[in-house]
Amino acid sequence: MKKISIIIPAKDEEKRLPAFLQTISEYCSHSQYSYEIIVVDDGSKDSTAKAALDLRKDFDSLKVLSLERNHGKGYAVKQGFLNAQGDIVLFLDADGSTGPQEIERHLEWFDEGYDIVIGSRVLNDGESQVKALAYRKWMGGIFNFLVSTFLIKGIKDTQCGFKMFRSSVVPFVFGPVRLEGFGFDLEVLYLAQKNNLRIKEVSVNWTHVDGSKVHLFKDSLQMFGNILQIRQWHGRR
Image (tube, rainbow, N blue to C red; front, side, top):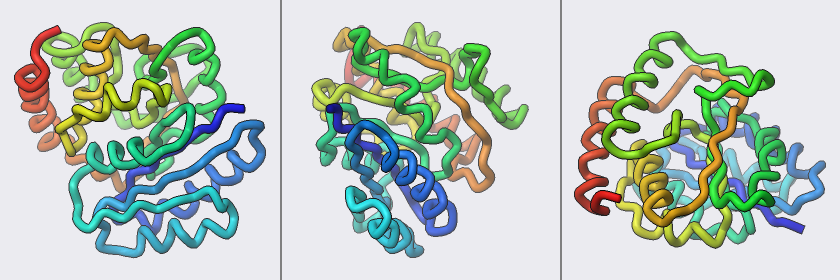
């Protein structure tokens, strides 16, 4: 039986996290698979860690990694992945924009030989729904065009907060990662392609949730700089 590790990076999420963790724990408890949940508290100033630990009474395979200071989403996800024990390791955003139902909906792709399965808000399989703000769709389209032009080919949405990995590939794609912020997805996927890993992009249900930690213009500009950094650090494929 597969064991699945769910990594949730969280910073100052004491309000939104408990409800989402409750949803995840209920989902995992009714599954045929064995799950562990790892919340990585990225230097929160509120009671994020306590809010997560309070849920252990409902799901005892929940762990909390508390970082002493804020590093960024990429660093938090990397720490979670390196501490995971599952055969499949994935991360979900703490806001619950993509629910745990997507996990087993797409597990079959690993049986088909894929190493990585990533969610997409761009692909449409006729069953999934994406509820995003219009201006974010527009900005996302521009960013994805730049990414596909200068860094990563064949992937329509690099930034969706739902990505699953076969545990055997985690050292190759997360070990060398240097980006600590929101641009880490780009570095992970670039390293995956450089290592000739098989990536399956799948349509997922995704809903905009207020309170995003992403500053659209500032972070988009920084992530464009990340494209140049990745090419410099890891060379061209």
